[in-house]
Image: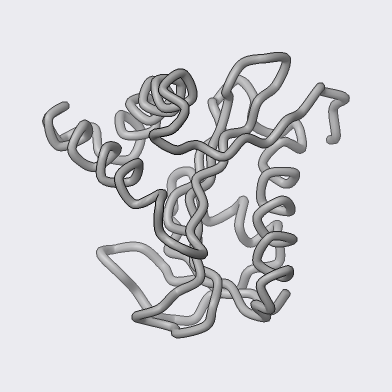
Length: 158
């Protein structure tokens, strides 16, 4: 169900401290969902490692802004190590109150168009059963029958 939101996509990098702060605040919520058993220091280290890589070529951390508030993000890149030349979605998050409103689809489509503009034809990711698999299957991803750290590896041709 698509909702009419004022949606904006913003690139997050260290050059914009306000956006970094918004990402970190949202990132802590994300980490509570995916790694609740890990200490906050690990969450902090992981999220800051994402920020520290944003200078790299063909890597994006994009915040989803709805009505002037960051409610989601996607971290993706052109893979240079595992599936060379593929798009790779590393992290994806939409705040629970904003799920099932078409915003995840919009954010994924933004990333997909960015990857297509780089000549990418295939995308992969690892999805967790609790809050990821069903969404990615609804986007057209298929199961590769491979696993990575207990998560299914999914792929799609774009």
